[in-house]
Image (cartoon, rainbow, N blue to C red):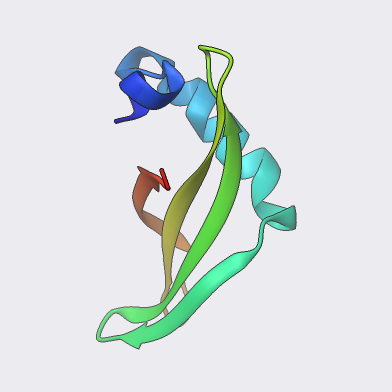
Length: 79
């Protein structure tokens, strides 16, 4: 999905990583929920693709007690 929507392949994982971490402090939280693993947060980040497109990408984070947030999932949020 990342390749067809944004032109981002596994070879560009550092590019995607940097875009997510740079935007994360200003990105809106779309939802929160409590899971058996900790609190889960869906955070929507606008990603600039390598093909010129800019699309929202949902990142899901788990926050466990006494541990840093952990990225568990990402997907392009195509309407």
